[in-house]
Image 1 (cartoon, rainbow, N blue to C red):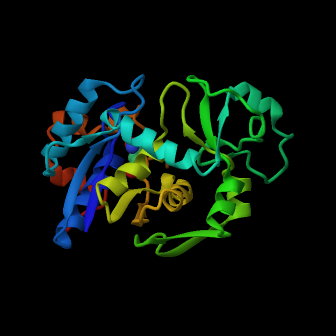
Image 2: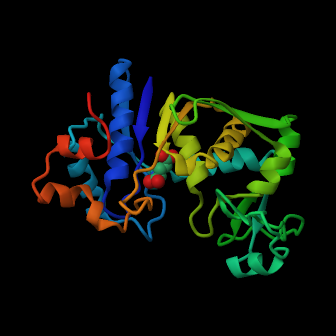
Length: 283
Ligand code: GLU
């Protein structure tokens, strides 16, 4: 068994991160496996070195250990480019020059009870799907979901959950994928990759057997499973855990400095206090 914690250094780690990291470490240790840390820093406009340094300090303070050197996504661009090339050869990609405003304008009027967004943001109406743009460096690359399912000759995706809250096998049909997620972005403008592509390539290269992360990424998992199938990569087991919320029930975000681990540390709390706060007792 190999698990990982994969934070982005875009702000201080909070209680939700502590929960994810401790669960992943705990699961690996209980099964004689290994826990890895990976730095998800592809969005260089938002990542900062001091946040990266602080997250190492916070995680060490919590008592976690991981093998060095850690994988940093900013040094993995060639691996992502290779994966994009592999997908491009399948004839399922297209370049997209739409800005958010264009997408909004092209979307049909909202219907009651039908969401206009999915785990990759606005459900793309397909404006650029059939236009033959010349390859442009600053254009985004999207994946044509219908062509992808046709290529795989499958109608449904599935993955296995081991976490108590979502235990079992989860399915999504091609039609459901097209209508609730749509042609997602594989590579962002000026970035050469996306969260979805990077996470799939890296989990496979690091031979992660069990992905433990917050349930805000549950729906995105179908994007990851589709990419794994297209790239001939194994699908790990998934464990999406409950989100840690503040007293008013709102999920924590990086901007919630009040719940930052570093803040609790500075206030004299102990790692056991943190564990008690997030409902982890016997470790
Ligand atoms: N880097 C992502 C985050 O900080 C987590 C990705 C994952 O665990 O798959 O939210």
